[in-house]
Length: 462
Image (cartoon, rainbow, N blue to C red):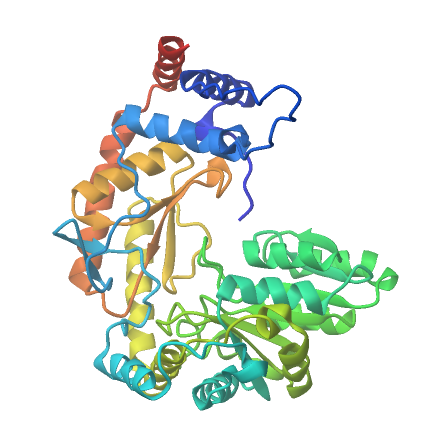
């Protein structure tokens, strides 16, 4: 989701005042003047960046309210339905380990065997001398699952979208995408130089209108949606978007990062969930770091598309090939997915139960369909931060999503369910969530006190 709205519910003017006061609280140290006659050297000053000042404000507010920083926590082992942080065991709802196979002995053994055979790195780009059999085995398996002719695997999920979109399209082309599309797709579109037109979330009619208005003036057109949106847990009407793409001679691209292993009876993703021919989608994109408990990204589609990308996509041609144990782990996880569809069924039962209980408790769960991702929308970054902190104190690890990652009104806690969670754990989590939310609602944050605190900090240091 794209950022917007007010910081912690404050007006734009109040935000500006807080930033000004905060910047005064930590004046930059004076630097010695350069010798006479020599020009001053330009040095990086991160504190001058607006985003850095926003981070400082958020940190100050958190400190004042007694909210511990929820980010970069050290997990001391495998993060599954439970995790260990600072020696304490927590119920964990902050992991993409959807099928609960991270640490599975079969997957660990496959990665270790790949190290024994190939080492820890292929030490070169694949076109040069980095090609290994494990790469082609993984790509063949991914293509099979997506009903595609071929596949190309790259070292990063985010960078896959950036390099593929960035170099498949050009300045004479058009990219039409969901307004809540992932950052990696936006960055790829910006890199391409193509005209970029967002449309209302999940609205095929809006996509149709955008293409109708702009398609004729561009050489190529790309329509991009996600199969399962990671912020809201909702899904598109894929058949409707495929029809829109065909009507306007546009390529259809679907990002399956949070759909593979989650959607469909076998967990094969959006096409299976929607009941459409996978060939209706021109470009299947996915990541290896969620259900496949590894790292990297991939594109599946027609053989000529894959051949083109293997020779032309800079993020593939000029990047080292995927590390052998990484490829082997993903391949082994994919084999588990194909052999054990009951994991997908258990995951979806767990997510559906969490969603049902949360809605019964009066929580705003957005558009979630109850398939691995359930947001609890609080409408306030401070409320989300306080709630996440309170849950952590009660032994539940869940991440808040705050402004500017989402608009202030959309601030939330984002619960990720897995096949490894038990019914008892889910019921306990929702019960504690309800208890702590009521406490926070009964004790609202005094925003004026926050502003006064920041003002005093600025005055003391000024």
